Length: 373
Image (tube, rainbow, N blue to C red; front, top):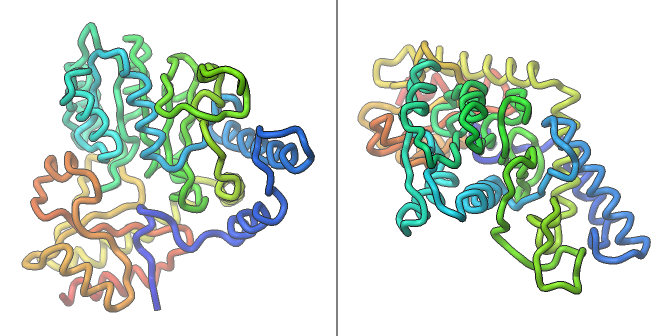
């Protein structure tokens, strides 16, 4: 039997409504949205626009400012490279996923921008001050994950958003591990929100979102067919077409709409409370062993993710042993080199991440097994 505790990578299983929506899209929405005035194309376009409205309402945005992407990495690259294309100074947090850190570092290595990394602390005030100290006259953007994909630590994004508003700095937020678990809105001070559709929003893989308030123009990363202004060789400037070149993933978009409706029905507070209860039970169970180190601080807040290590066992070896018994956990560096450098975890960690479909008793049994290793 497979027991999935790797839901920070992608949630599985998916809700029945999500699976039905993806299948229905293949049966009913076979047209290419925005490409043609015939019934099939129009029906598909209407369904896609309905999904934009669902996303916009959920995140406090305008439907035309909702851009469908391949994943959160795609969205972050579009945002970072699109905002920083004219040069300037960019600040990222010390807990960033490589989806943010690599494009920022690449621009800096080419000499196109200057880059600073803000240290993150368990205490919110110290973290905000860490960002504040790095701001310069030419600071154009701050990029910050809302929650670490390694430890689950929540960053003070509302306070950082306020700081950005005061300094007229574009705030780009990575919501991959927070959206669906925490109530996130553009009104929190976020200018551009990038997130995954396939994690706590429960859509299928191959789905992501870039949601903007429209304040800062984003230079397109990809140019091509948009279905509008087709007689011109110039990319359209109006959203969402300017950032949505090529055929959309209609079945994925329909699954994402269904996933958001699923989250809305259950409610974010109920989902978060249930998953955090599973994490508490897991942490309580492994805390009985002196060999287990859990990377959580009493001074910080977390989404339902727990990183840990077992003394004397390489993380990947321990995860492999558990995988042989049916437990799915991710081990290693979790595509987050900066976070592990800050933690000092030279071999990475093992990550435990439940979903709304996880069972308390499975987490408790897993904890017992880890203590016996």
